[in-house]
Image 1 (tube, helix red, strand yellow):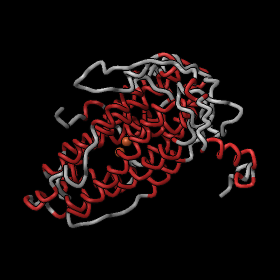
Image 2: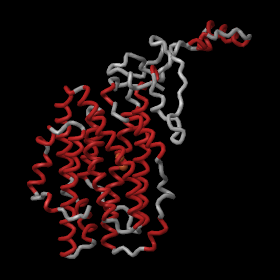
Image 3: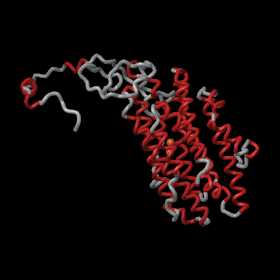
Image 4: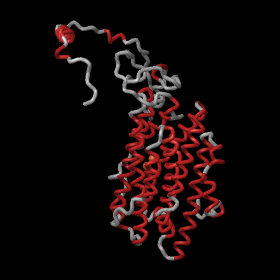
Length: 379
Ligand SMILES: [Fe+2]
Ligand SMILES: [Fe+2]
């Protein structure tokens, strides 16, 4: 216990007198005149139900929320009355709207809660026994699942780390990243289960991945962490999920990737819309984001030289014979180009095209002689 109250209530005569008074029926009832806005909200779509978007009205809404909301720093919900001098200051670090806000964040939250799924029962695990996967392909797939499990565990920690630091006036963002934390916990679960269900188990935890993940966790600000994780890292992971669905050894794995992709696309969209919000409202933060992405891209590059990409080459080529490896390299080359192209596309959509000129990925593509003509995966 580190926060002690300033009053010992059982030693306080005013408190004891007041309590006895209440017991006699002498209620104050002042709270019944809170002076807050009285509105009655309705679902704009009965089929969809009552959403946070329907609550976006007046003092309860988020459109009217200023860049500097000079409201409470405690747990007062937006729209409630509060005594700013008497309420506990929870000391949130993120008090500016542009610190956390994203276009469409209420929609992302609603989508997240309506599309939850269950890694225990929504993947037809028993069907794995129907398919005869070559051992080296299963081993490579287990390596891929080990990497994804590591990534997903940190993707769980990151939103959890920042959630309580956000001012409670931004509850739609807090709700969204809380939903992300449970999405990511489920992703770690599904990849762990897949590695073990295939009979190989977990493989190597990769130092390259862990340094990159540590850099995400240690980002100085939430927005830097978001640019690194939501936009860059999860964007890369989303491209990898799509690729992994394409090269999945079994239909069970295809199903698993379809389920994780719908969550991952939502996380990436939030990151894109947060970046767009920052650039539209506080463009002075650009240089800070460039510096963060310089290092984020550097960490991301390190992963192109790891067991992860070898495993993907074996998976894509469906084996380790020279022809299979040659084919695997062609396909994985396409993936690498796609990762970079899709990252650049997200930067453009966020209004940050100037980043592309500075990106280290341009040099990477040139260094490994990759270009669009290497495309080998049918869209
Ligand atoms: Fe994930
Ligand atoms: Fe994610």
